[in-house]
Amino acid sequence: TILKRNPLPLHAQMEQKQRLTNLEKFSNSDNGLLIATDVAARGLDIPNIKHIIHYQVPRSTEKVYESSDGRFVIVVIG
Image (cartoon, rainbow, N blue to C red; front, side, top):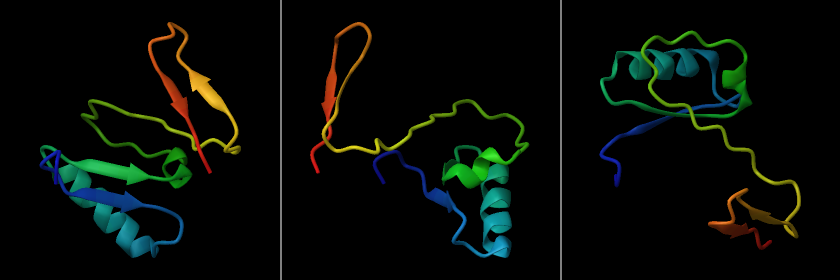
């Protein structure tokens, strides 16, 4: 992969056993990448997390988003 990491998914459609397996793999990894839906908002306690990126997909495809400093614009096209 581009980031030289194997991302591990975590979402509600997964069996609980697979979710726990992926959490354990992520926790034991030195350079893990966990991609999770809002199922992760239910109180995960994982030590030594360096970065969390929260991204919410826009509900509308007709909006234009601009950063507060005006440096970039993201246009979402349906």
